[in-house]
Amino acid sequence: MIPIQRRPLPARICRQLADSTATIAASSTPRQTARTSWSGATTTRRRLKTELSTMCARPSFCMYCYESRGTDVDHFVPIAHDPLRTFVWDNHILACGYCNQQAKREAFPIDTTGRPLLLDPSVDDSADHMTLASTGHFIDLTAQGRETIEVLGLNARSELVEARYRSWRGVVRVFAQAAREKRALSADDVEDLRFLPVVDAFHHFVHDIATGRLGHKAVAPQVARHASGNLPALKAVFPGCAL
Image 1: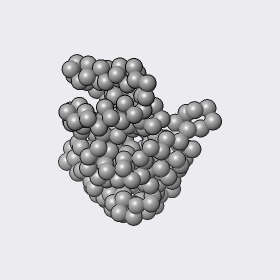
Image 2 (image 1 turned 30 degrees about the horizontal axis):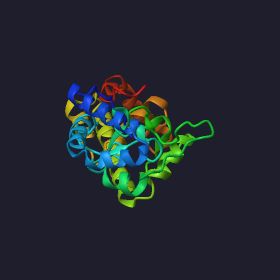
Image 3 (image 1 turned 60 degrees about the vertical axis):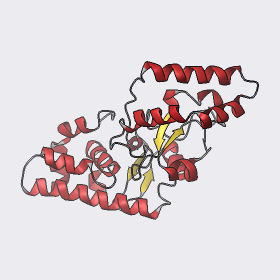
Image 4 (image 1 turned 30 degrees about the vertical axis):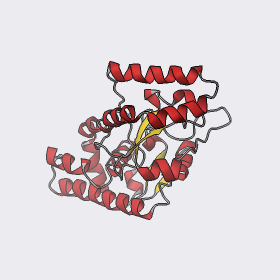
């Protein structure tokens, strides 16, 4: 889950969202009105999807799993939990059908203080809350990471784990080749890494460079050392990350 940089919406869409929110707020049955309004807002949903599609680290891919195409505009805080956020731009996430309709649905775990335990791709960096093992499985580092892995089924989908595993091996190969040739990563190398089956593997690899975790993931010491020398250039690939 790579942090996205949410851009301002065109004024026309902002007005449409504000009008819809006002209608829900004035209703005596806000949850029902929110669901009905969202269901009928075909044009608005299409425009929101277009805006969200351009913000992903890989255009038009799910902001939760980064393995599948983003087909749905998901509400980070579900309508059932807060109908007034149905048409709030900061609450919209591009998701694949599985993450939105089968895994997350209306789940929204919170802790005892009311803080969301599900990571928000427009606010949170998943690499601060989970780490990617060389097997393709995620290992939680925080309670938020643990709940996100569970709610989205990130380790439960064998095809997703396999895709992350293949992508992780692809990342290691690119860095190992550069280390053997004793050169910095080229622009072509970075482009290849950005278009692996699951770009999140590259994202987590870069965080592992920054945190010194590569040595615990069966990455050869000389490759880990060489990768560290490329970190300044790699930071620009993920501008939303605090590396």
